[in-house]
Length: 337
Image (cartoon, rainbow, N blue to C red):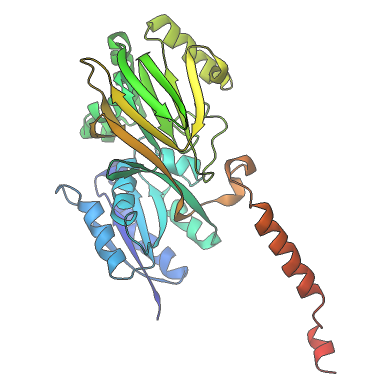
């Protein structure tokens, strides 16, 4: 039986670039051996999520998320809770395209992004679970984390990343501390913070130095707690980020690798949670890393080795024994004698 793929695309993403390339995109996945069809998302809530879950339950082998990080998040939420999950592929057409950036998938050319599938390289990616929802790139709380869903969709389409920069500049003077209790892997931070977030990749809001040592599949979040709310100090921390990721040892930052985090507001604080750029509810909330949960096509040749967890010693030893056993087998010519 031939493998089946479903391209779930947001027709309004990327200034509608996906529409004009869709026939060629379908052809690429056909070339890769998939009988491929497409589904255009609608304004209805959870359109991409529901379609991803439907085709997965019907036994499709591949679900392609074509759109921005929000579309990718919805598709993952459609398949992550299933026992049998299809592979994923990404065609970025959003504003920041953090997930595609981490997977080294072309971000300016949808057809080139589709052709990554022809390399037949996949990676089993970590994802996060927040309450009953899933996320693939970041979860966070604090005023600055809210800018991604405060920028209207039409401005994202028209002005792209510039819209985020303008909104970020507007929000900076309005940063206020909140009281929070964060429990993580046997440690605890109980105090004031201006922001905290958990990252699964090295690309956060288009910046690759915020999490300079991120791994894509080690079973751990990179957690950052920004304790200061002083505008001048936050601007200084941003310069350290841009200057080679030198912020990670700054005393105004808590920087940890963690598997599970419990976030609880203190006093009258309210903490809105951002999941992959969308409002995901309010704290209290528990975040759990699901190690290597979804297999995704990626451009592995361009991903740094440090970003991918090495195989365990047991697996490496099994591979060594297998290769040693293969080397002792007779060659085809010897077997005929």
